[in-house]
Length: 413
Figure 1 (tube, rainbow, N blue to C red):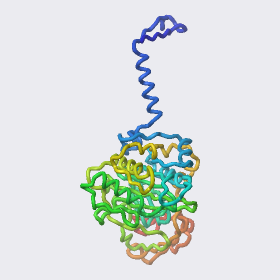
Figure 2 (figure 1 turned 90 degrees about the horizontal axis):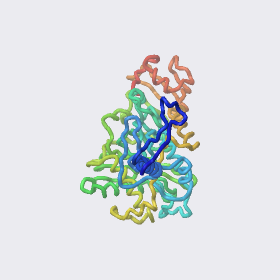
Figure 3 (figure 1 turned 30 degrees about the vertical axis):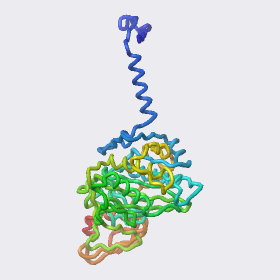
């Protein structure tokens, strides 16, 4: 095809002489390029599900297509009836947890809320940048070596749900299963998850993986591959979210959480929830984060395509994706006010440091002599017998200056 452009009519003859320029095949190339761009804008392939942020890995999946949705489309999907899988391409822990909370709060109840109804079951998958995450009702300094986390540039995150402390990195998959309060059990989702993993690699994993009564996943009964937390709402909704260690850099995250022995000379008093310490390990076998992400997605599609009691074989027809579609979004770029407000709250020092219950700290030998006490509410010191420590001082500030100013050798707070 021949395409002609007349150019130069209003320019100086010295620079642009009026003439006809003949381009051969250019129209064909433009047509192909435009179609490629339009396809990329219409359907985002799963190869771009999780984009590279900072130095994090990208997820490159091939067995299904996820439709990228806008903020308005996502708001409609969440507030209307229907099952689906949602992937976040963001790795920001605050934004992902904010979207998770929005999904939980705005998923409508189905007409039937029985245990066999899966009409509005949703699965949310995401991967976070390295961070330390604690439960809503935990004491931050009792659970996390805050000074070490800050020195390594590891963000501190307090969830909106309960549960214990965990460390996330790029080799860890986070999931959240939203369901009904009547249909919720602590073990339902992790039991399915174990089955999906075993079906993927029965030679390596058969009889080795187990879903515990606490909703955790263990290997050989001795090491945890993932922990869980739950939230049950007053309006008939519930969700179970957790982690799955696939290819985490366990040597690099070691020491970020406080040991079960605690800090010598430091005694905590309060209603904070203690983490259940356990040895952890990655999923054994030749598995990548990509392949396990895909296994979880397709397992959910199969098991929630119809009745919750109807298990679809792993090699069944892919038509089930029509009943449980897959969508992707960027939690960090959503223009949904409630998500943005929740993320801002999760980032705030008031929430991270002061969102837990009141507590008291007793310092004794070998930290100090004579013994000293500090009482804290909303992250602020409200009582103390340490000379020179002003009431109203943030406990975080006290921890940073405890050795230099107050002579306390609490370097691991």
